[in-house]
Image 1 (cartoon, one colour):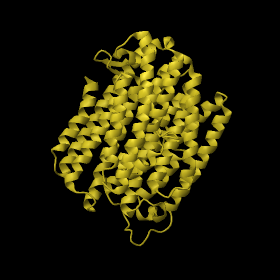
Image 2 (image 1 turned 90 degrees about the horizontal axis):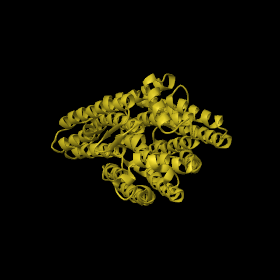
Image 3 (image 1 turned 60 degrees about the vertical axis):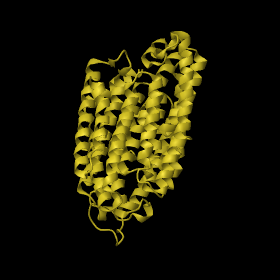
Image 4 (image 1 turned 30 degrees about the vertical axis):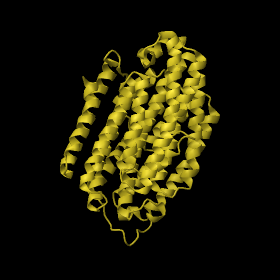
Length: 488
């Protein structure tokens, strides 16, 4: 029954929020709902990683190691973003930027969004997965435009239009895959069940399967933020409330990548790994390269973090393309590390932009002096996301580079290393300008909200902990997922 509880809890939480009118009531529902989802996700993951794949409803629900891993990321970042929302929106209410009557709709949409992401990873049917990924777009677009400003509404529309075009490509690729499966399995919904397709992959038409993967890579790659289909992402991340930005960057992008990985595993069984790996490396490298100049010349702190997300999704995609157990281990570890670190950074950026009432990097000065918790946290978070030891991103990037060089992919790995080094310089230059110096006279000294400050420190401490020590349970989980994905 755990999958049904996992899917039902976000919907129940959203439903209860509809009838709440006071901020305190909404806060209690939010905290209890987030904790309940987190506990259920832990129990479900424990079952999968100790007892094997969880199958329900004649294989309609299918949660293997890869699905359970993404569920864990969704639950963790969802809980962290939900808790950070308490302080973030308390400040918005106090500042008169938001009416209390509208606050409940944020939490309603927040938990509907969490539900759609969980739905992506629990279903076996690739057609239903496509529906769930489209549902994540619709629910999160409403959160992107939540503040109802001209810029946020424009970003939401751009998000919907670009991702809808992408999802049409993914639909066409899914139909091609179904057409290839029908010749082997016959017509019926089972022809799109991932577990069934994997069993008959060697019998599928190679030409159709290759074409299907190209459309799916472009389609879902739009949602991942892979260049050149990435243009929606900086606008959406910069205009969304900061806790939503953390969800978008930390787990939504991984949910879309999950869709690509599912098809990638089938296609490699049909035509071998060379075809898909080459495409993943090309798109991944292009994404890192495209993000670089925008990071170097960025003037908006949240757009800077958005382009950083494009870079890191590119790194993960390259790692999957390199293949092998070590590279896959590094890619999966990087998913976790990026989700944790980027959450800390978006929370820090949220505190800073609320305090300074601007997102412009040039107008945020002396952050360490003005905000004694958020300022140092943003600086340390920048070191972490840029891959500086002893933070967690360094470990996963080092693993990926080691795998690339070990497999003889010297050009790809060397170029990636150069690009990542330049990105480090761009991020640190921008954050250093905000962190040091003297704050403007109009800016008060102190944190805008103590709870928001606490929620910045927690994920940052986790980023540091995972940089110096990987708990055996996490290492074993990632090893299982890498093995399940065919790493050798």
